[in-house]
Image (cartoon, rainbow, N blue to C red; front, top):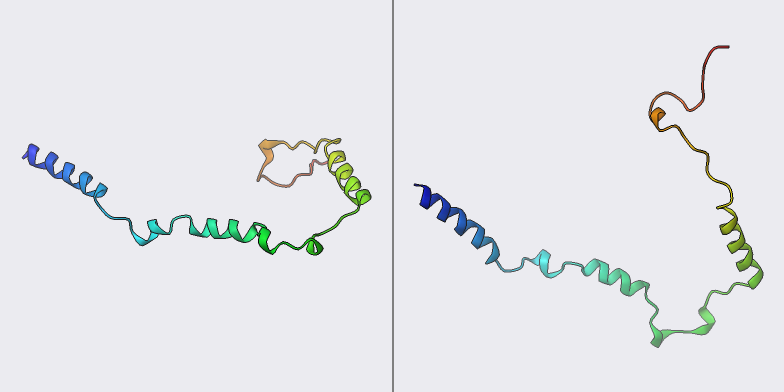
Length: 93
């Protein structure tokens, strides 16, 4: 009985490798490839007049605001209070 059972298990595992790809497997990644293709710039249809433009002053101020956002650390929170009550203390005085 034991050799038949192990042979049956072996055949089941071996049959999993012998199947042809399903329709899901043949189209695997197609949505990602299409999304990347739609976001890519096609050089044959490229028109310089359609480029978004930005002046140097607004670009510099955007970079300065971004870098300034790291000057002050965000306030730390007590992780032991997550999901318990409110964030403010309500102790009687």
